[in-house]
Image (cartoon, rainbow, N blue to C red; front, side, top):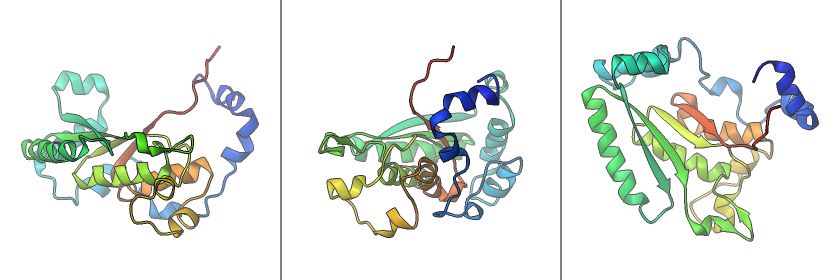
Length: 208
C-alpha cells in the first residue's frame, strides 16, 4: 500500500461505513491496544520466566531479519479447532508451548476452525466471530503469546450449528454486524488484547 489515497480508493463504497464507525459494543478502554509499552504492561506482570521475557522482547522489538540473525526465539503451531484431530492437537501444542516457555522461547499459534458441520444452510461459519473468538480463547489459554486468526466474515455460528453454551448478549451487547465489531469480538477473546491478534483473510484486490 503506497499511501492513504490508494487505500481510500479501494474502499470507496464503504469508506464512510468503515472509517466513521463508532463502536457501541466493546469499549475501546477495555482493550489493550498495541503500543510501545505493550510488552511492559502485558507480559512483564505474567508468569513467564526471565528467558521467555527476553525472547519476547527480542521478538517485539526487532524485525524478522534481526530475529533470524540472533537465532530462533519463538515456536509456532496450528490447531484446527473442530476437526477430528483437534483434541490431540490442543494437548500436544499445550505441552509444546509449556516446554517452549520453560526453555525461554515465545509461542505463536495459528487458530483455525475446520469441520464440515460448520457450513449450515449454505452459509460458511468457519470465520464467524463467535467460533473464531472461541478458538482464540482456547489458544491464549494454552499460553500462545501471539494468535493468528482469519478475519471474521459473519457471526452466529454457534446458534446455527446448535453447539456450545451461548448467551444472546454475545450477539447484541458484545458485537454487531459491523466488521470492526466482529473483529473486536475476536480481540476481546484474546484476554482483551493482552495477547496480540494478527488477522489474515479478506477480499483479494489487485493493485494496479
